[in-house]
Image (cartoon, rainbow, N blue to C red):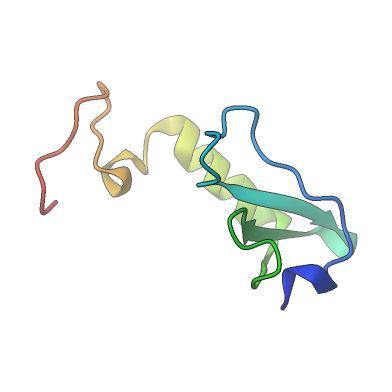
Length: 82
């Protein structure tokens, strides 16, 4: 779906960097959440059920997804290729 068609208020984390390398989210009716790339506000938006976003946040908070970002639980960087 084009992000412009969402017709909602987009928000991003206060921890976002000023270079525009962020994701923005918007609450939608029916318990859905839209996600877009802040660099391309007129680009596509991905639509997820709120439960999927909640699961993502839980995974981030628990450290379960750190390996995807190339990080270990202690904040050290993983070797390249991992």
